[in-house]
Length: 593
Ligand code: GTP
Ligand code: SPV
Ligand code: MN
Image 1 (cartoon, helix red, strand yellow):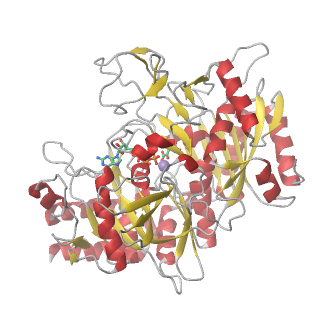
Image 2: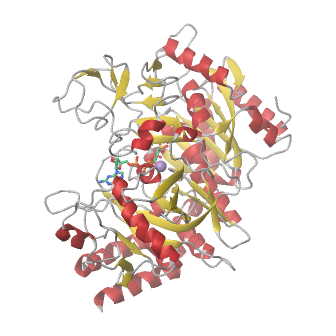
Image 3: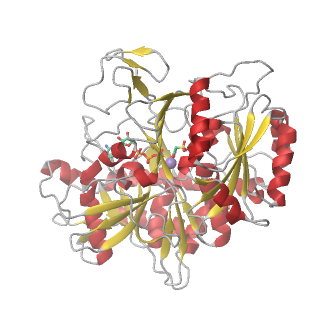
């Protein structure tokens, strides 16, 4: 097992507090996963999907379907370190509360110990965590999303450090009480981070980022603090490789908010001949400088927890092939006749009869969704047909371009390039997008989501902006170029102006050419835009009028944004870096010129 006394002591403490019936140390084997899946089939949590080998359908509790941002806390010692964008509570007070909730919380259940590595085991960019959970669903998902088991304990050794991740669904069982298919606690949910201690306590939810603690809790909230302290970056970014017809290759990272197109871009099938895109990761990037001065990125994850609705052979064929086997589908619908899962837009025609994500009989035309809008698949990255050969390279891949973006129906053009690293940091810091079903709450509400990290930055966002600016001043740094993209512009009558998906390759091609020094651009008040002939539009079915609108800068609309950006910046008080104010002032001046 392990001789790591810190780990052994912690498991004993948690067991004494939570009082599980059993403790199971996960070895990560296929046999173990098969046994847990069989157990969940017996419990009614899982239903095998005949059309997909090794795959299961799962429905959550109707009230446990997405991340709960209002129940997420950063419990730093000092309130000011959590900043204005995070919920905060005094650590001792929160621990007292959590001890009350966790006491006896695992009665009637098994405590699973999941040693996991974020990043290829042994990579100098990787970090180890251990999740203690009473949810077998979490174990089998973590086995896909991260590297788990005995090999991680070996790497950890007797004295290695790890991020301690404690999770309970918060639903103890009385003796003889039968379990429900999706245990959770409808009344008490807490997703809590103690950044100074590298510790996470999650209670009451079994879903996604609330429960798979390697993902947002560790790889973004805790890791962003580690990155601040260590001079690197932990970001909500996809990573893709792009190869031109001559065989030259660059890597691109992109930060879009939740459910705003990272998975789709990470796996895109270019529509322009001769260009190839390959996927390193679809959600998180950890980036460190190497001795050559470049930022190298790894994907700390080993799987995809992707949005199912909207995914089709047309929009993302690579995702469809990835989920053909060994995958878990949560909150999609089930087609008994076909023995397969289904979700909105998976096929042009919906089946005549389905079991919905709520377990109800469903037929088209009822106005109800068959799948929950935040229904997700969990699938191994290695099954992606366009997984990059370097996706497990422990050194990471050198990043040439960083993209910011989001859902902006107006104002923001299809693509533009920042004037400098500081200007690019400014663009990220004021990024805004419409909310999606990835978080509990209203959908379609515009909000500022800096660097797509609003729900994920584990410290004061003003300090986070300063960290970005500091990265840009690293001696000898050969920095990536920064771009801003917007696939989501709409016409006055609500049509998408841009076809998106595979056609986004045309924008990536211009970005590639800008990195190579060949792409043509015109300087505008907001940054560099492609010249009218610089964007490859051969074979593209977009009208000239739409294209002109996509590539225009409406100075009046941008000027109207300035007060909103000032208001957003005011939240960060004295911690707002001067460099960002300077960029905002300069933008205003250029717009008024
Ligand atoms: P998280 O996993 O929540 O972090 O999200 P993600 O950024 O990976 O989101 P994903 O790629 O799954 O995007 C989900 C939604 O964006 C779906 O509704 C897609 O249909 C839509 N989408 C993705 N790319 C495009 C695009 O290029 N154009 C348009 N119009 N929609 C897109
Ligand atoms: C997101 O919401 O950005 C996700 C899904 O990637 S979850 O893992 O649930 O956070
Ligand atoms: Mn995400």
